[in-house]
Each structure stands twice: as structure tokens, then as C-alpha cells.
Length: 341
Ligand SMILES: Nc1ncnc2c1ncn2[C@@H]1O[C@H](COP(=O)(O)OP(=O)(O)O)[C@@H](O)[C@H]1O
Ligand SMILES: [Mg+2]
Image (cartoon, rainbow, N blue to C red; front, side):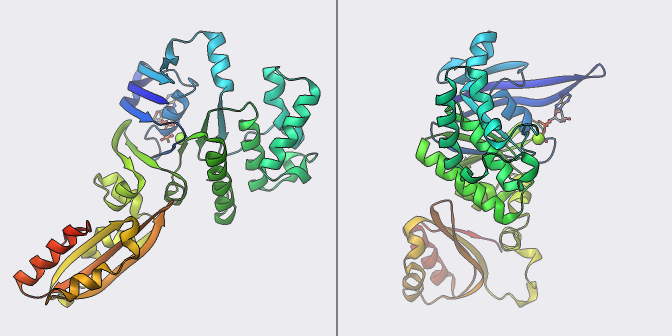
């Protein structure tokens, strides 16, 4: 659905060229939830805003459904933007309008519906985001979560195919964040809406996204399926972001900091696995077939979006031949293993 090809953006600040995006190439599929992470200043907002041309690329192309939007004239761009919804960290609601008035606003701007049809659409959207009771309140009378629900309803008013989210849950408490994420996931599934989001919260990526790209210094340094990138981060920025706020993963990625080395006798091995194998007694079968012994030092069984996964840090003890046998069996069951020391 979206194809970004060799996109670069430079800003001119006091006569100096500042590179915000540098040769970005990326594809996002229809119905996909795609996350973009990176440190502050990495270029995330610039990239997101390039998708509706709020930011004009210096070079490169942005294709939506096969059409290069960088060549669109004013009218076509106007039409395109109606088909792309956007939500923001600080909601950007019109404070002098009611909840219903805020949601009605984009419908008025488009001018395709008469007043009765607009009212019908507004009440549909209010029900969708669970705000039917609050139609006549003003933004100042709402909680943060409710404000973002208004933001979402407003973004969906003109039935967009694409929703852009710029740190949409960053101003919300954890519980409210979860409820907004559930709403976004529900909308993605029910409406088949493509979502591109940027966030500094890794939990948002784990809960919502199918794929993720990591951007640093205006370049994509890593991208892939969320489970693959989060369980096997390669770039230092990805490693540090994935470990942030997650001591277990931090210890798994860098066990030297987590364990007293003099306590270790055997081989330190990290296992990771995805999907059905998570709920099968494969480890006990493998170990029964070998004379090697194991100690679990650290472990997690959870899921990333709908995909179950496990990661275990084991100390393996035994003869070389026994351990080789364990590794061969792990391979056979497609359990990824890496020897850490
Ligand atoms: N309008 C602008 N004028 C000049 N420089 C900008 C402008 N917008 C962003 N930048 C610069 O581009 C880089 C990327 O910014 P941004 O996309 O906002 O990063 P992020 O969203 O990842 O924090 C930063 O160095 C920022 O200072
Ligand atoms: Mg930003």
C-alpha cells in the first residue's frame, strides 16, 4: 500500500543543511500495523509526516497504492489527506467545540454529507470509540483517554484507509494506554485500516505492531517482524531500546552484567522460540535424550501481539558430545540457540 523509495529530507537552519532523513526505503502492506521507533531527533516525525506530505521530501518518492504523491497538485493532495487520518500526542482538539462538534469538523470540511447524514456519522463514530454519553461535553471536561478517543473518532470520520499515529499514547497513563491500544487494534481488524505509528514506548510496539523499523540519525538501521527484531536486536540502538524498561530482556541480551561469573560452571546458552512450540514439552524431551543437565537462570514465556514466544537463559553442563546432541535436537525443533559464554 505504501512504498517509500530513497526518501531524503534536509532542513535549512541558519544557512546550514540539517539532514533529517537519509535514503529511506520502506514498504508497508495494506491492513498492517507498522511501528517506527528511534531516539528523540532520529527523524520519526519527519518520516511519518512525509506520508501525507505535511513534510515535503527533498528527494525520493512516496507511493500510495502505486501513485507517487510527491507529484500531486493542491487538489489531489487535499483529497488524499481526507483519506489519511492522523492522531497526536496532545490530541489537538478544538477546545471551543463539543466532542460531537470536533468529530463533525472534518465531515464539514469535506462537504460531502448533509447535516442529517453528518449527525448520523458522528453518532456512529461516538459509539465506535465508546463516547456516546459524552457527545455534548467540551474537551476540557474529558480525561486524557477520552480526549484521545475523540481524536481517533475525528481521524476516522472520512473513512480513511491509513491512520498515522504520532506518539498517540505517550501522554496517557499505562491503564488508559492499554485501552487506547485495544481500540486501535479493534479498528485495525474490523475496518482493515492500515496503521503507521511512532512511539518511544516498546510496549506499544509489542501489543499493536506487526512489523517495526528502527531509525537512527535519519536512516533505517534495522527492520522486520516485531518478534524477530525484539528477540534478536542487532543494532546498538535497537538493543538499548528493547532492553529499556525490561530488566529481563536486558539481562538476556547482556548476561555478563546479570550473573556472578564465578558461579557459572557450564555453558551459558540463550534459547528463543516462537509459535506453537512454546506450549510443547520439547525441552524435557531433548534433555531426556541427552546426558547433559541444565539450570534455568532466567526465562520468559509471553506473546508479542498474537505470537507466543519463549526465551530462556540456560546453563548447560555435560560432556562436549552430550551438549552437541542437545544443540542438534534444538535445531531439529527450530529452537534458536546461541552460546553466550
Ligand atoms: N522544521 C524543522 N526545521 C529544521 N529542523 C528540523 C525541523 N523538523 C525537524 N528538524 C530536525 O530534523 C531531525 C529529525 O526530527 P524529528 O523528525 O522531529 O525527530 P523525532 O520525531 O524522531 O524526534 C532533528 O534533528 C530535528 O531537529
Ligand atoms: Mg517526533
